[in-house]
Length: 68
Image 1 (cartoon, rainbow, N blue to C red):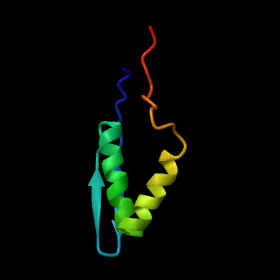
Image 2 (tube, helix red, strand yellow; image 1 turned 180 degrees about the vertical axis):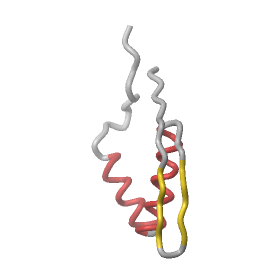
Image 3 (tube, one colour; image 1 turned 60 degrees about the vertical axis):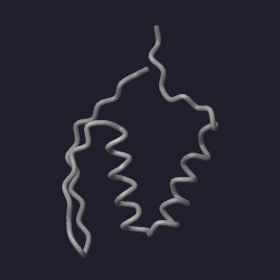
Image 4 (cartoon, rainbow, N blue to C red; image 1 turned 180 degrees about the horizontal axis):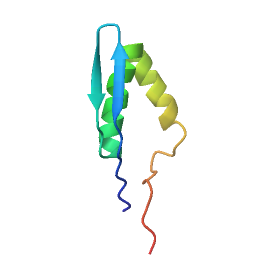
């Protein structure tokens, strides 16, 4: 399996506050993105948006595989 690492500094601001994030993996980035989507759109709209992304992939998609 391929390992993806990230080097990013994300600063997010909204009327009620702000946050800084430094994700190191796609999983951490996804958690941050989902959290910000829920803050922006609300739970149901964020779920619908994420559902549209999953529609692009077959249910059994296994992600990027390392090649021999």
